[in-house]
Amino acid sequence: MTSDHPYKVTVCFEQRPDGGLRAWSEDVPGLVLSHTDIDGVLEDVTEALKVILSHRFNMPIDVKPLTNIREALENDGIVAPVGFAGSKDYVVARAA
Image (cartoon, rainbow, N blue to C red; front, top):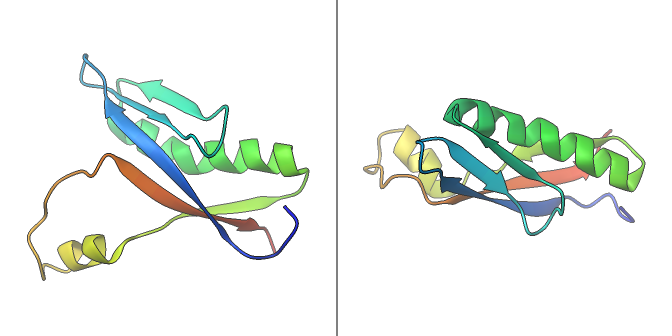
């Protein structure tokens, strides 16, 4: 990582035939998570990105989910939820 600017990583999610969830990212080769526990996969994405990217860049990396404005409006009850979009963005930056 050559700068202190944050980067966006998109993670794709796909429902498995058994009801579980699969996650991967074209931005981060090697990120593949899959399990019958949907919440477990969603929770593991951030830590998996931290581990993979910290190893690749040979420095501590912070990862945080990026909430889009639609999600914020839905969470505050301002607009009706439309459901899961199929992907989620994460902010990746050099750890302080």
